[in-house]
Length: 415
Ligand SMILES: N=CN[C@@H](CCC(=O)O)C(=O)O
Ligand SMILES: [Zn+2]
Image (cartoon, rainbow, N blue to C red; front, top):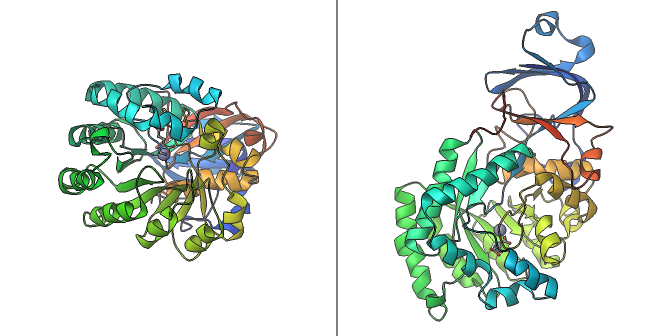
C-alpha cells in the first residue's frame, strides 16, 4: 500500500529510539507533504512528495490523503477491559459526593465487579471484551495491555487471563496480559491477608506460569488495599516466574508504592495522582516509566498528576486510558491525549509521544510499535483533514480518526 499526499507524517523517531525522556518529549518529528510505503505488514519507506521516486509513484495500490495526517497508532498500556458489567449505579453515588474509598467500603468497587465476574462465563467475558476492544481500535488504539484483577479467586483469575489469551489470538494487535489478583482483598480474607497472599503465590502464580497466561504482575499498592510489604512479597514471588511489575501506585495517597516498584525493577508505575518530591527522587535514576491516567482523575474528581514535575525531572511519561467499569469507563485514547494537554499541561507533541512511543515502551514493544520508522509494524491511523497536529487534542471529545491501518491493512472492525 502506498499512501500519498500526506499533510504530515507524524512520529518519525529513529527505529532504535525505544523511549523518550522528559526534556526530549517536546520533539515530535513530522514530515510534511509526504508519502509512505507499506509492504506486507511493515513500513517499507517514506519520503517527501516532491522527491518521490518514479518506481514508487507508479505503484498500483495507492491511497491519496490530501489534507490529512498519518499517526502511529495509540499504544494504551493500562486497561482493565475484561469485566462482567458496567457500574453506573456507583455513578450516582459519586455525584452525591461519595468517595472512591466510601463506595468500595459500601460493597461497590472492585469487589462488586469481582462478584459479577465470578458468575459470568468465559465466553460471555470474551464477547463483551471483544466489543470494547473493537471500539478502542476504531478510535486509533493499535496495541493494548489488559489486566486481570476482577476474579480474585483461583478459578476466576485464570478465567480472566484465558479471556485475554483468546483476545491475543483473535485481534490483529499486540496485547500484553497483566496478572492483578492483588487488586483487592476478597471479603473472606479481609482479616487474614496472608492467606490471600499465599493463594496468589502458591496457587495462582504457578498455574499462570505453567500455562503462560501473563506477561506482567501488578499490585494495587494503596491504603486499604495492599501494603508496601505485601506488595514486595507479591512482586518477589512474580519475579521467580519472570513476571516484571507494572504497579498501581499513589492513586489515592503517597503510599511507598513507587519506592517498592522501583526496587523491584518495575517496567512502569501507573496513576501517581498523588506525588511528592520523594516520589520523583525515587524514580530519577530508574528505567521505570511514569504512566499517567488523566481520564481516571477526570471521572473520579481526584487530582491530576504532576506531569510537569515528572517531565522536568527528565522522566519518561506515558499516557493510557485505565479503561475499567469503576474509575474510568472509557477507552478513548483521543480524549486521554486531550486531557494530557488540557489538564496535565503537556504540549500536544509531548502528549502524542506519551500516547505512542512511550506507551509502547511501557509494554516493552517499542522496537516494533509506537513510531513510524522503516522496518516497524504498519499500525497507524489516518486523520480527517486537520489544520495542524494540535487540532487533534484541541478538538476534545471528538475523534479525528478516519482510517485505521493494522499490519498494513485497513481495519473495519472485523473481528
Ligand atoms: N485502582 C485500581 N483499579 C482501577 C479501578 C478499579 C475499579 O474501581 O474497579 C483503577 O486503576 O482505577
Ligand atoms: Zn488501573
